[in-house]
Figure 1 (cartoon, rainbow, N blue to C red):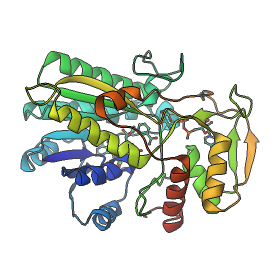
Figure 2: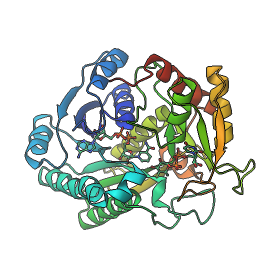
Figure 3: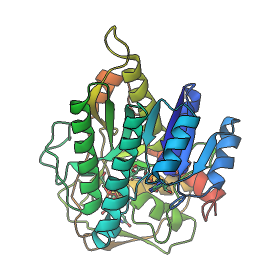
Figure 4: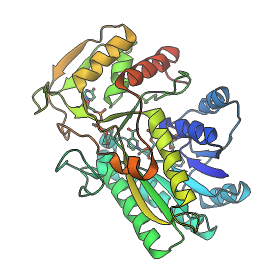
Length: 343
Ligand code: NAD
Ligand code: UFG
């Protein structure tokens, strides 16, 4: 079976291609390279021994998408392609809605026309907005605090409406908590452009000497050590979650084959770690001192966020298995092999 992986050269998409390949599903990568390097392709070959087909294209390009979906006889789409920087989204809301929502609509129209009615969508814990209770389960009210987050809320709603309007559609939204880590080979990983916004790449770049010091944004939260707590999930566990979700619903619960309808799952570990715990885990893995300073809270941040991921375990048989030690060690391997990313 062949599936299209939009954004397949990116951080999460590339790791998911490996997981798909392992499961005997052939990924066809479709990426406009706006935030990825084509060198990922060679790295995937080194890791898997397989040269995946890839197309440099935009999900808003109806003609190109139609051609690729038809030519490869694609049966489902794993949809990672999106812009993802929260801060940038508040400065460029139109770009974010255009890329993440409008172009997804174009893609869904093409899929409908070609009768390809299965999609696995990269959503985010950001769709829960300010947590009203912890751990967060899938019944938690949906909201957001920035255009990036709203773009995820909107696409989720579109997928829900689509599944309701046509009973042949299978739409699965996977709500990621905080993806970190890298493939155990050290050949692919996260390589943000410019100064990293996220904690883990910032720590990694500090350990390798690209940054002087980590700023810890707030030490006066109502958490055990006063710093922010998040549910970090290893990228390999996250990638496996996509395959498990797809295969579970593809196989179908009943006698009639593939499930249909709309489904949403949290992908997290259920365990929260603080900023200081992450710094310590990384210092241990790298055997480096990680200099840090205490800084004011970052605007828009919440104290604590972690998942109730039991629905994914019950329904899909999936659970995260990697520890923060694995997350730190694998990030460090990637960071030291490619200190400046693949470029
Ligand atoms: P990424 O930027 O590494 O990957 C996204 C890929 O999509 C990039 O390779 C980019 O070139 C491509 N792309 C963007 N717009 C495109 C378009 N119009 N047409 C074709 N390709 C396009 O990001 P990632 O971290 O791998 O994230 C993947 C998905 O997961 C995104 O939808 C993101 O919003 C979501 N997500 C990420 C996180 C995270 O912390 N990384 C958390 C929650 C959700
Ligand atoms: N932090 C620091 N210093 C830094 C960066 C982050 O102390 O240099 C702290 C933050 O204050 C927070 C924690 O580290 O307490 C994690 O911050 P990240 O920026 O790594 O992650 P967030 O939880 O803020 O955001 C992530 C994604 C968003 C997504 C959100 C919810 O980046 O896209 O998770 O899923 F919306």
